[in-house]
Length: 263
Image 1 (spheres, one colour):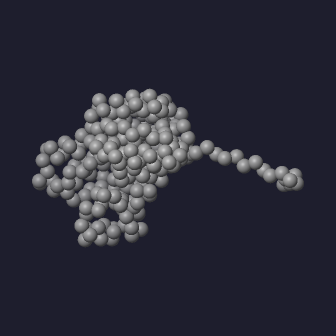
Image 2 (cartoon, rainbow, N blue to C red; image 1 turned 45 degrees about the vertical axis):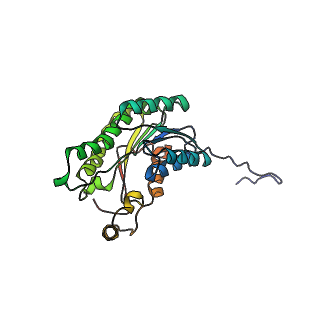
Image 3 (tube, one colour; image 1 turned 90 degrees about the horizontal axis):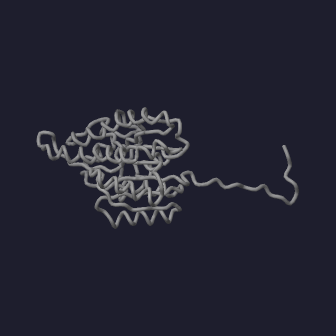
């Protein structure tokens, strides 16, 4: 072992942030899981496009938080179900930050009803956002991701897509559809070294969960081996891993962040 000469200290080299120079687009980033993801990526040095549809004030709050955490943020309004909107968002992304290297398809909505009461409009509304939006965003940013040195497509699904859920036939169908979509895009990106993975959270503490009656939440907790609901940070940490170089040999996978629930 070589001794350090007296009076000298070994130089400590600081590593750059994990996501330095990475441009990350997060859809539905103004609240809930999307907000936590945007802030987590920003905290590790990313340039983050904070997409929102209607929650402008909240999106700008997220952008400010990303900036404060050491990243750079660009809030952009776009309805992901509208291809023209998404293409305009991509143009702004490239003007501000350059090509995107990471796309997180998080935006989604629910229209919950028992199937016998569900209308075709209820069905189509959820399909257009939860699957149509994923198509629009992935199609628009596909070449950016494919050509990136660290291209990452990350789709946010749900345990509901794995297990089904009473009154959510439309939502469960869209979230299950993301599994096949992710696997297929993973195969099509693999030759260039870019990856596609899917995160399937369990029941997360968000505004949506707050609307669930207490008696129902108690039943859900009984099914979770870890005996707690996920936090948005639990999900965001997994997304940050998938966005980083550390996940470079993982593709086409579904990561179940659900506290140990079976499916």
